[in-house]
Length: 617
Image (cartoon, rainbow, N blue to C red; front, side, top):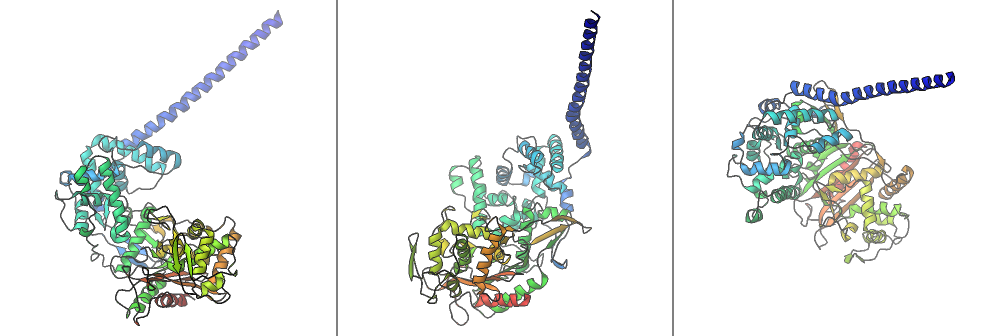
């Protein structure tokens, strides 16, 4: 009996001990749970009490700062000056209804009903550390604080301020504040400045739906969507996107919708007199700003922070590029235009960028057909499939590819190989190689070298439908940007390592401290195996250089069905520098030089190329 009683007492003590442990665990759990719920709530309300959103007038006054762009060695390149009169405040009632509706339809369709923030965007930031999905209220907060970093801290602060401002101000007041501090491009802030800059008219109710649609489309990325920067095709595509949003959300209907037309003829060229920039400087500025926008540094953020941008441009190389194009084309027919891009193959840094000095049209970023200068990408595709540059190659005078007949004279030596065909500018051996490999393989090799999938939302290396790859892939018919061509050839120069061409190295604050720096790492282009990728690139290089000197490919694209040319290229490299030169015209047309001779890549473009590359050797 005593043993039994003792056992019962021990069991009861164990049960009591377990109950005490569970009570402690529950108390700890309640405390942790309470902290998890309570501390964020306390932090939220403390932030709510302590944080405020600046007025739009304060924000506009803080934008009155100069942004400095520097060469890679830190010497001054150009300054983006604040423009007096380009930030006029417009009360809500004076913003035309059409523009209000176009902005809401595009930027935040639930603006009038939502609580000031997008829960989806907040959730994405919490789980991934990246922002997104910001509506009008959140955009105003980002612009007013100057903090656009995609971080959890910024997103949470945005949530607090979005809640606070929505409770304290009317939606009309929030919209008024927002629309007055956002940039519409061309160094304008607010709709009155934008209407004047693009259409040369005051802001009033005479604004058309087409004009409202254009201005609303500029907000997302003003340095990119300006037709003066990206061309009419891109601007039209963006305008159509906004127009479709207005129709889908019921703001514009029926006859009114069908009457809307892209207002290209009404859009004025950008006035650069205030900044005193030459057109070649203007092109550099636009490219730098567009690149920085993609990295989360729009012009307003640069101005508020009084930030300095260190570019990758080399002062000597830039000056030489401008001089080489200008001097070589000086006595040539007046319709000839030229552009140059030089890239450091080791890291993709653009050392020279000349988009021309013939107006706002940037020839370095305007897609043009590469013609026979595309053949190195076809060769790379063949090498990846097991071909050799020294294998025998047929050179028929006529060849059919995807239902299209191509006829070219025989130029290859008697022993025709892919190597000798490249050296003699024979065409049909490379069309035959593209036919053997298939268009997908040729396109893939060009993309792996560095030709992007799309530019400004439009697919590259495709037919106009954006999907099919046709016979044009065999003869370089698809338009490509000079910038991308230089970057893709640089992959060959770097032994098969691909780097993205870029003009911005880093952003510095007023104390010279780095607040952002590019951190790209070159990667094998043609195979996950670096050795295989190097072998392919080195074989392309030996084919282009014929085993001696720099690697150079000149080429042309024919005008219509004639034997004349409309575009001429010279693209080549050493291990230290890749340079691409284009010479052509604003329109597709037959081109000749000052001697009346047919324009070819081996004449004007090659002369410019040699002047630049000899300087660097």
